[in-house]
Image 1: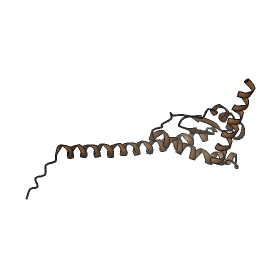
Image 2: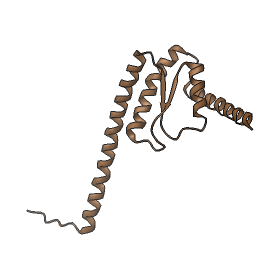
Image 3: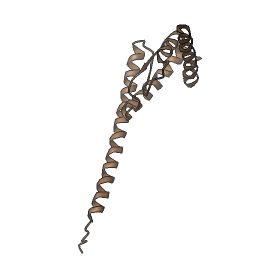
Image 4: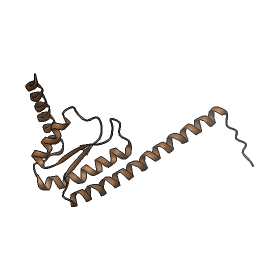
Length: 138
């Protein structure tokens, strides 16, 4: 017995759209996995070279220069903003994996370093410094 199935134009359109969505999701997942792998490899290389650095993507805050200076002064850690305001899956996964490797190395050097608290504290200090500098010029 032979099935005689004929799809309408709309049904073919839906099938194509679903295939496109599934392939985009698969591609994004592949890019994220590659980004995470590359981030871990680069972090390990930087740690072996003695470079402690954190990488962030997205729109950097106005006080980024002050934050970079404070992170360097307090923890001996470089801060780098890479990527734009809407990072792709590769860049997001890269930064996340890179920073996860770096946090362990940073805590060996600065045991009191806390991921969220340090960033928040440094951002407040940087905003205060920026405000002081702005007031000094007026």
